[in-house]
Image (tube, rainbow, N blue to C red):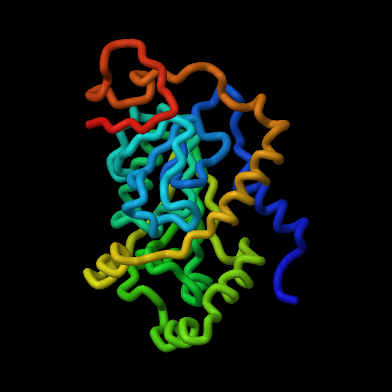
Length: 267
């Protein structure tokens, strides 16, 4: 049977979703946190907080706000230079109009981090219509090639839709997730190259897309994360984070104000 063992899948889950190479004093940012923010993140950033852009998420329609969440564009983050020790950006860059600009901001506001994106060859078999880029890794360079249509082959797309095989095929591919994604830990800088720009047709398709939400999978992932991270909670930062300590100089308010688990809109 195609796929990998449950033990291998759990090791992959731990490496990608649990393990973070920082101590409890580190300040961690999750960019594009959506409905499944990383357990170790201290601060969240997401442009689509409510359910108006629910197609950008595969779990719940609304973003989860259980930590300070900045409603801001990832291409122009409201944070100070290198204020974060670590930044996580998982399955975000394939959605944005200018992935190179987001990467530039990631490496500006954080000293190190982790990027995860879908790998092009697998995405060309089954992909989401909200993805704007085919992504490959050439040596240590992330290459973003603009999509001109929602799916790689229109005939295969029609067949998968008519036969009802799209989701079963996606589930089959997900069993060997390491060959479906690109994992990129980074420090100081990320090399990337952008080829072309998404067509106006592609942008319209992405904006109008309706994606089936898998709330059950989201809940299962959250439960598994809670169980696995229970022994690790001592590694989470405990000291309050003040607003002026993380935002750019032009956004500071000039008084002590610890961040709270709510949505912040600045600038």
